[in-house]
Image (cartoon, rainbow over the protein chains, first blue to last red):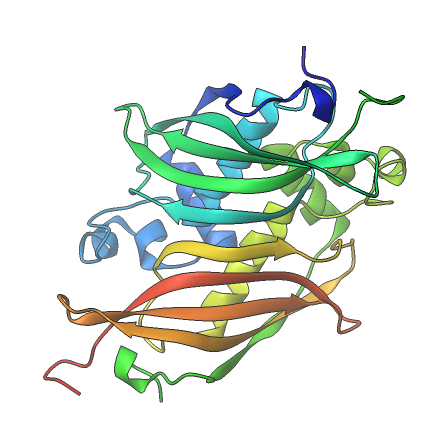
Amino acid sequence: MIEWFDDLALGMRFKSPAKLITREDIKRFALEFDPQPYHLDETAAEQTPLKGLAASGWHTAAIAMRLAVEARPFGPHPLLGLGVDELRWLAPVRPGDVIRLKGEVIELTPSRTKPQGTVRIKWTAFNQHGNPVYTFTPIGVVPRRPGGV
Amino acid sequence: MIEWFDDLALGMRFKSPAKLITREDIKRFALEFDPQPYHLDETAAEQTPLKGLAASGWHTAAIAMRLAVEARPFGPHPLLGLGVDELRWLAPVRPGDVIRLKGEVIELTPSRTKPQGTVRIKWTAFNQHGNPVYTFTPIGVVPRRPGGV
């Protein structure tokens, strides 16, 4: 069981549960945070490069955060991020899509001064067709096992 | 007035309106997308590295998107991003904070094959004390002026 930084290893993999995204979810998020035609109006969205209604990229990012929390990569420790690298939207997320997240530990760096380490997990979100729609690599901080390794 | 890729210039700056973040906003977003103690429970949050209730980083990111839309850096053209580089959370966003966004064009790359260009704007969100709380550099796509420069 993973509990501390010391329990993580390069190449370790995680999977999240699945999450359905509805038309109502897409419009509600967009109305509050990203009020643009791609995300609010089916007819107008047809005329855009997205060729139809699609979730705001930040909505996809927020759902991916929820799925990462549910994947519990750090066991009982919450996810706390300093930032994110390589955030890319790969394909539109449509009403009715079901998203899952897969992650892999790609970097582990123990702190030289604090009882913790930074962890980079490359997460990729896939839709129900198995196509990648989004990827991001957050920089997480996890405490070291008390009393040394 | 900015209308096309060709109207943008390196060093061009943008400012957004301000946005107040309430305790209720923070908890509502967290309950849906980032259900962790930092963002949901005042007492539990005191015991974390954030030392008190703070907005989910993805909530701050979503608010920043809204403010970027309102800053209209591409004039009538909507914001469409391929991804984001250098996303960093710099300080906690607290209940009652008022956030503003400032942006600067740092890279302009015309496409060699399509009538468009990619634009990197480094955005930084500041709170009411003038302290930076968040920064991100989205990679935007903007059409070129029809009929050449």
